[in-house]
Image 1: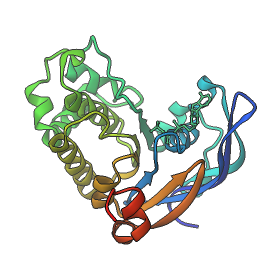
Image 2: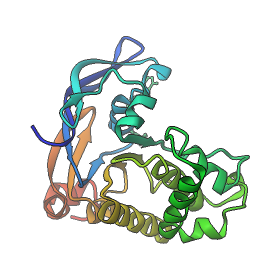
Image 3: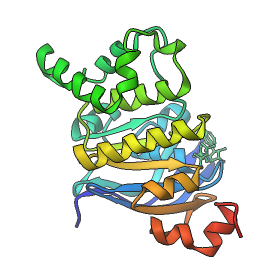
Image 4: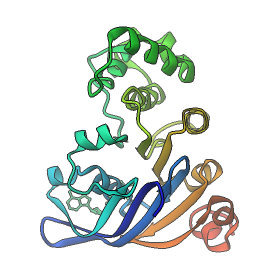
Length: 246
Ligand code: ATP
């Protein structure tokens, strides 16, 4: 038994017939950054949604296997109860409240916590130290900010819930390389200084393997390779099929 997230042999079916995850097992030990890699459609988002119990909205079901967090079964928890246990998902596409300011978006992240407004302010100031850009832009309506700022807002809002683990879906999507690098640096900072573990689903294999400790590669709903990120980055098959070098 080990602390952290453990997924044992899960199977996911959409619409009662479409088998999408065919027995996926993976672990995210406490304090680590783990990358879930694979091409478009491999099953990365489905894996994250299975953990957060967000599949039912899409007519998906976990039909086999189990999910544990810190040695307790969490498969039947609602997304909100999972947040209370410390696990929060940042969805692909960021999902900010477009009509709210960046600061109000961040404040909504604290709603599951029973803390005073003074403590919420302190928490907010701490979050701003990781995201100085958001502090400058705090009064801007989120819908009018850049893709990078929206991604930062989504991660910052998740941090306001004081999670021990963040499930981060495709943080690099649609962003310029320099902004992607900035976001991964922030993730690394949150991991090392706030001890937040990350499971990040990414198609950008190269950047994910530079920041992660460990990686899993999904193909067609199955884990086909796993290992230390540094080993995967130098593996010939990974280089050829996922890093575009051979
Ligand atoms: P992407 O990067 O495009 O999000 P992914 O690796 O995250 O890819 P998933 O989104 O998990 O992949 O999709 C895995 C498979 O499940 C795909 O074949 C997709 O078409 C299918 N799928 C996803 N959502 C549904 C759904 N709601 N109903 C039916 N099939 C779905």
